[in-house]
Length: 196
Image 1 (cartoon, rainbow, N blue to C red):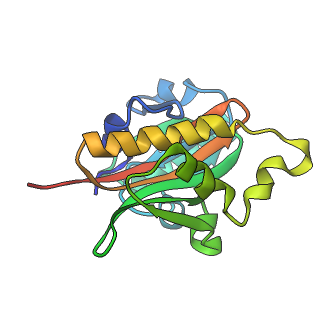
Image 2 (image 1 turned 90 degrees about the vertical axis):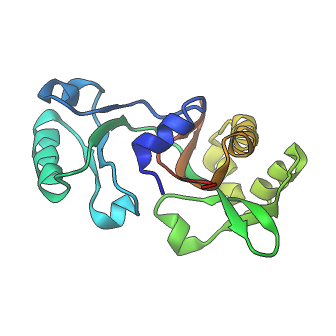
């Protein structure tokens, strides 16, 4: 399984949250605060303490030092914060059904709520829309009059499926993808490539 930096290089044509690899102190002033610092590890970053939200430069310097101490062999990235609803889009291999598309609520809720939908590939746009709209928490997209660009999210899911077929991706986990008012952006990624 590839870490976030290598995974991002594979999905670079998808809309990604802006990020840079920290190589010098000045990188901490790359984005407006708040932003995230992330260690490039394979695994659940939140649980392992590999992601930290930074509210100012002093905060960022302290957290970067802690992260270098905990993950001395891993690169660290600075990544912008995008507001919206966290979703997960994945592709898994199933012994019976073959390649499955997984869509659901992501971030920290992925493990807790288990509000996900599965569909065997290939899928049409109608299938994609149905998968999202059949999620138990779908009403959140229209709660309190907030508007989210779901059409861009559906298009992003279609692009992910197309990319996975083209790039010989065995397994893919984009979690979270943040669905906001101005589009949907991939914030974290883990990918396993087919080996021949």
